Image 1 (cartoon, rainbow, N blue to C red):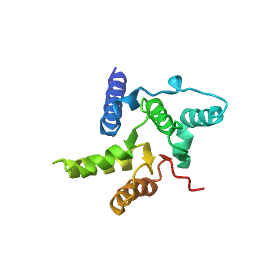
Image 2 (cartoon, rainbow, N blue to C red):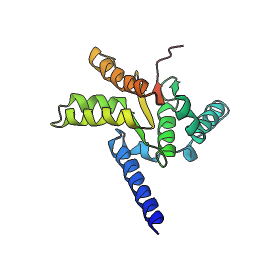
Image 3 (cartoon, rainbow, N blue to C red):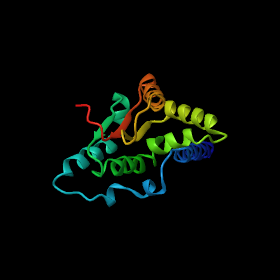
Image 4 (cartoon, rainbow, N blue to C red):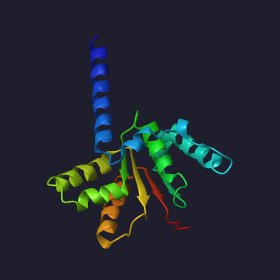
Length: 173
């Protein structure tokens, strides 16, 4: 009976942790509804969706190998949808932090009273999350200030050797 109580406590703590990462994520309401089941798959994107779903299904391996993804393409090609679908798939079992870069940038610029505390909380979560997804790099002008903020997010992931997914309209190939 004690083992069952311990298991229930661990499960409850895990669910609380997963819910915390969902609250910390910086996304719009639409992002929470985008799933692989709602994807419009055609001959042009079928292989990409198969690869992304494989990544999600084998995420334990991705964590062990620190395997991330860089998804790029022209505006309106579904990169954000893919990021959101990955987030919604994995957040049930893993601590996943999704950051829409435009929303993050606006949050920091607007001068909220608690913005520094929020940024510190977010950076701490960035270090601990099983996966960090940064959506929409390159959709706004990358000022020195914003470049530093992006660097901090990415650098924390590299330091802790945990996976990162970035979507962008910038092709670095």
